Length: 153
View 1 (cartoon, rainbow, N blue to C red):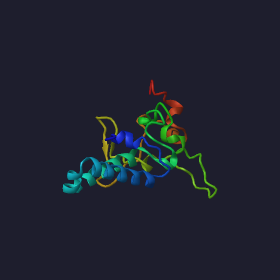
View 2: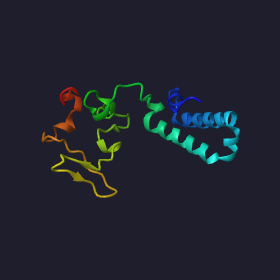
View 3: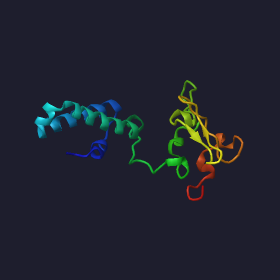
View 4: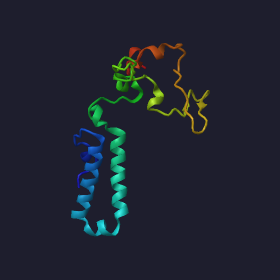
């Protein structure tokens, strides 16, 4: 069988087309290669399908042409602009709506700070990002890569 990485390596134009492909591919694979398992334990097949669909939906966004293999590692947003290529308050629709630079659009910050002064969010809530060094609101105005090189953050 093709691994889930190979399945997710396929190019899709929409999330829906990917989800449908994953379901069809895995279903047909088990139907053809393991008919007894397919008949006797359909819940395991469904679990596999949902698992691969979940991995796909968290790592690949066909409509935005964003996938794990298309861009460098953006963890921390220090070496490359990452999400801030678009989420930077600079992109505006004709209706005047911006793609905001708001960490909480994608992240749930449950804890932050140094080990000596750590803050925790209340259950079911999230914290607003606070820059670890006091630079007032300068971090709101620019991108992380304006100051950080990734090599010496």
